[in-house]
Image 1 (cartoon, helix red, strand yellow):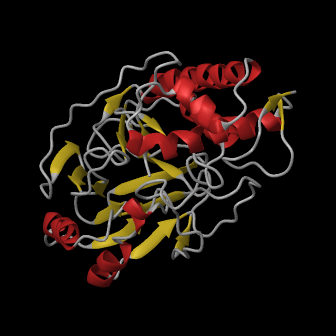
Image 2 (cartoon, one colour; image 1 turned 90 degrees about the vertical axis):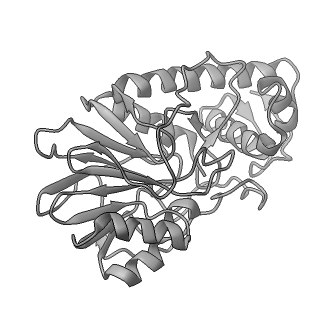
Length: 316
């Protein structure tokens, strides 16, 4: 699951919703980088999940996308005679992960990513209707386990893993060593996108981790970002800073709503997300719950028992 539309209370962000693509057609993005967009559009995935092919002589695939025969065939066709040596996951939400088995069967490539993880949040699990890609594969066992700062290289490409949890505990971003004098490329997955803000949905999503991961990307000097959904964007550090400011303002707005009488997530959502697409109310509720969990951790709110969408809220 990627993003949540409607930002009426926090400061408006300059979203980029234009995107030059055709489903199944590889588009060159930078030297040694091509993108193929999966045909799985939705309010959560925008135009669809982005799959990236990295390398000139041999290929690494970042995010194989959904389980879709046409998308898998498009990846294989784009690789042509070049061997796909690695399949890399930014995270294991279904819209990024489910195409892995078919691509692996066709290529025999090595898999790489964060791998299995445990959820530490006490917040009750999201409802099943929270949207496409709402669940992750918590027990994935890649051939190559990647952690913060690990480098994965083969032939003419090399990627450095950046652990950026928040959207999910296993979320990795990747920095590409420039190919053929290309730009300093960041693959931020679903952590920061240009078309909208990312959903942070407990128990997998954790707001404290998400904010810390934004600060990590703010400290970098990448020149362009190719995200998991939507088009590319420039100056990734500045975009991460804008999103951090936005989240802090959203946090303040939620806390003020509770201090002025809102006692439930439903009431907070009605105040914060005015005019929201009804299909996204579930995602908005989970995002608010993530902020509330962060406020409880900081002692700003009090609750009785584990958090859930039904929890009665009160300021500390």
